[in-house]
Image (cartoon, rainbow, N blue to C red; front, side, top):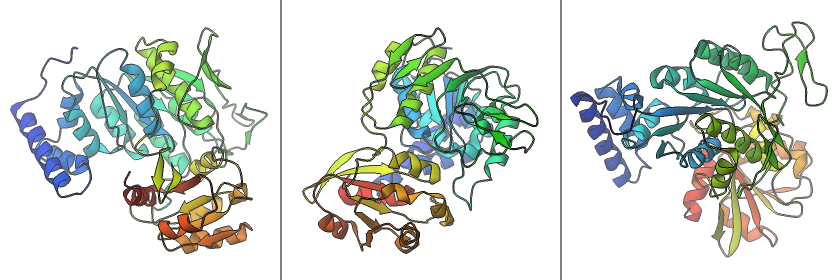
Length: 412
């Protein structure tokens, strides 16, 4: 359907207007983008608004524990080759934030929407997506999220019988099990660096065998599907075996994997891999992530890592020792208040880096680094850490609210 038809009832239009007004008030008060409060107000006035806003759009949903904000941005850039795109680019990924994003997309053809893992099934039910990208599942906010097997089961039930093309990572057993209930799956070999949540079979509970990049359950026969798309070094291999070079300004293997999945999604809508990948080069930073900023005459690169898998990926892309590293950890509501996940992170990967520790839970992190035999200094604030750090660009790694604090501090 074209983007010019108007699916909105008078009540829905009133809800959209009220939501935009609430968002504007929130912005004026300096309380962020206002997208969440705006969406809440709009949904209060019309509980079916999300479904109404989605009716004229080709909807693409992106969900994962790590990488969904970046992948959403890459897909959005690729699909702009085929028409106007609306997206929740700032990462407000629950129904209220998604509703706010779609309310601004009356002229769009595509909606590329990041969805929190817990809300995927409900948002898919409301928006009737043409495509769903599933990247990975690993442990996250221990006090908030269900354990990974339960989350995979929730996805599996929600995707059963879905008409959407599901683009799923063939290397993550939990994702494969979740996606296998869907009749139309496109498998992508995107890799899996963090394996600690995928050693037992999600289907039967047996022990997974992992020879090389392959995996299978010796007890029930559940196994890695044959991918039709693959990340191979610095190239994406398409279903015809053609290799397309990946040129990204975003660092690290994880972002190449995100690009491979994004190229597969773009192909569903007729955008060729070469065009999709060329457009992805435009993305320099995503909601402040990977930005290099100037602070106190020093270059700081801002990196977000929210859970063990994310920290592992981030350690793989920082500059080598003796590059100084600032680590900042909070445990506020948006982070999850349980910091025991710090013990799942292999901090020995930072050996040789001068480390400076910040954040509400800096002492929790200090204990963990002490046990990992790392040399570090606990600092009261960012200024002290930057003043103390040896010369050179500083890598700054923070979890969610700590990252937002740092962005505000450096004026980013």
